[in-house]
Amino acid sequence: LYFSAQDGILLLYHIKDLQYEVKLCVDISQPISSLIFSPDYTFLLLLTEQGPVYSYKPAHSGEAVKLLDTCSSCFLAADFLIPGEKYCVSVTTAGEVQVWFLEDGTCLSKLDLGTEVHV
Image (cartoon, rainbow, N blue to C red; front, side):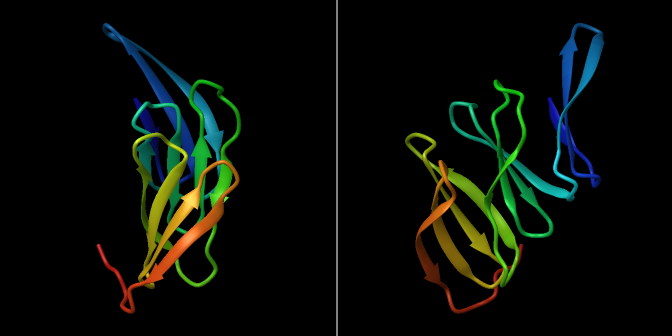
């Protein structure tokens, strides 16, 4: 079970029978608003309340990599485009929909909806 609180720390709760172990995975020092797994569970997207989106590979237990950042408005949501996990799509609060290449965070395409987006 992956869990994050307002402190920006991603934790793994390994639960077996009635026992559990807590492991600190990564600290991005920003409140995490959403955790989204890729369809094959090799990537985990970490959306922050302050805007940036990070990628974390649970099998490699390394650092989170900042993939996406925005200066005009915060990311409201992001998800993987399937099949595969090479691309993701995001939407900002300003109404900009973007398609990203996850390997290096390149923005491949964007569409301005012309309106603010809310949850």
